[in-house]
Image (tube, rainbow, N blue to C red; front, side, top):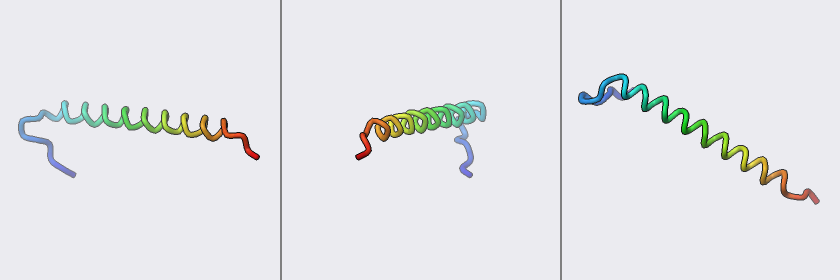
Length: 45
């Protein structure tokens, strides 16, 4: 695990981790929604 930068407080690092996690979760949810919508829109022959 990388040590935080000397000029960076731990609170800022934790906030960045939380923000990154939220963005990742949002991207995954949107991607899965679009994937399922695209898969359901395809008429299965």
